[in-house]
Amino acid sequence: MAGVAGGGGGGSNDFQWCFSQVKGAIDEDVAEADIISTVEFNYSGDLLATGDKGGRVVIFQREQENKSRPHSRGEYNVYSTFQSHEPEFDYLKSLEIEEKINKIRWLPQQNAAHFLLSTNDKTIKLWKISERDKRAEGYNLKDEDGRLRDPFRITALRVPILKPMDLMVEASPRRIFANAHTYHINSISVNSDHETYLSADDLRINLWHLEITDRSFNIVDIKPANMEELTEVITAAEFHPHHCNVFVYSSSKGTIRLCDMRSSALCDRHSKFFEEPEDPSSRSFFSEIISSISDVKFSHSGRYMMTRDYLSVKVWDLNMENRPVETYQVHEYLRSKLCSLYENDCIFDKFECCWNGSDSAIMTGSYNNFFRMFDRNTRRDITLEASRESSKPRAILKPRKVCTGGKRKKDEISVDSLDFNKKILHTAWHPMENIIAVAATNNLYIFQDKIN
Amino acid sequence: AGLGGCLKAPAEGTGDNQDMQEKETVSPERAEEAKLKAKYPNLGQKPGGSDFLMKRLQKGQKYFDSGDYNMAKAKMKNKQLPSAGPDKNLVTGDHIPTPQDLPQRKSSLVTSKLAG
Image 1 (cartoon, helix red, strand yellow):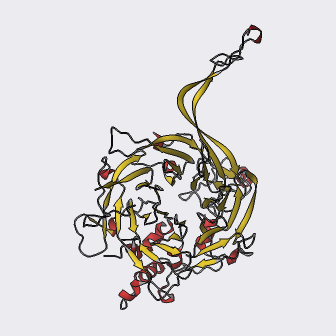
Image 2 (cartoon, rainbow over the protein chains, first blue to last red; image 1 turned 60 degrees about the horizontal axis):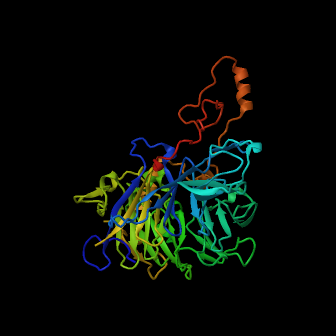
Image 3 (spheres, rainbow over the protein chains, first blue to last red; image 1 turned 135 degrees about the vertical axis):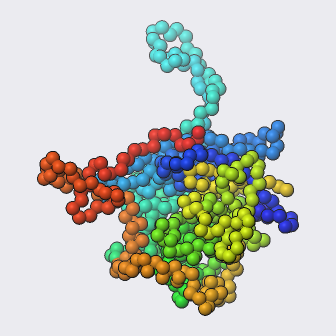
């Protein structure tokens, strides 16, 4: 499977990214509720779910390929939408609980229905999305419009028959996993056993069984006895894709701990500790903040994991704890802007990252609606932009370049002209094909490859 | 131009190319730090847990005490209670938040525009 786009210049694996679709309004004034907060493909890639700050989930389904339109490779159209979470107020702690959907994770499909977990800061919900395309007609005790029939008037019995009806997609909450987190949930991850999942907040990680809502096991607790001694928090956690006993969690200090649930019930002691040594002479006020890991993702193979910190993406070999095997600079030019990025809080932005289906490429977002892709084999990288200007059907995306100083070439953009309000924090890559979903504030862009 | 693409992990432990390139000048990070310290001289001098971590853990905390509010109203009788001012989340000193100060918490019953 091909990796990252080549911008011309030979190579048998060259292909280019094209605009496919964009969802959402073109408002100048974006309502806070419309800001997309998570994007996730399901295991087959046929469904694409988004969550937003308003607590709503929208699921898109890929259309079957149309023989009469061979160039359009299955568009994503709305399949279902529902209100997952509502704003709440914890009166006891005087705490406002946002309805923002922090994460959505799909369960592997086991029958005709689809299941996903969605979470806000405090509560995880299991949603069942099912289709109804038949309706029973010919009931004995009621009319077609629902009115009850007089039982004394019924002289014959009939067997109701199923008739087709317009497709209706229903979403219903099947489980509510509440009251298990004192702090704010940042991650959920479904285990490869398909029975359990973990949820992580700033200081604790809990293990749940999908069928049981009134109990959860605490498997990691890093809360110090004295909160004055708090030095780091948990920023992300994920189960290993194949080993149901293994999970990792990342910290605000740039470290990753791998834990094995077979070794003890409470996994406070890690089995592996991943940290890149830092040159103490280069340490600054910003060092710890920019080393904070905002996302951790296992490769599909399970051999590697990827971490995203403020300026870079690192690939780690699970067999080597003392440094990453690959480091990719996302926007190194921001290193000389850290002071203003601290003042406008952008330095605390939490970017996510993702692998392609074959683990040959990785993708992450940046500012100015730019997103970056790195091909691990060819070592090539590309910067693309999600914008309405390049939104013509099948329009090829032009690589973008940031000029860091000196002469600005034509088509380059200077660092000072970047729009830091246009952040791409959430991206997703189809599990098997070269289709990507990029969330740009309140718009969802879908791009596909175009084979030359 | 800045560093694009991939850096292979070097043989030594550290990977900070910036330092190697700019031996004579201060690293950009240090220069930015100096800028920040010049603007906020008291930064980073508080003891105890990191400020950022504490702020992160306390996200969402709102302070409206109906008892305080009603007692203050009784004391002031018909006079207006002082309003929150520009930063509605700042609750210190004599200020008591009023119901008008708290942002409206309305759930989004409107369908997402992504589905439109």
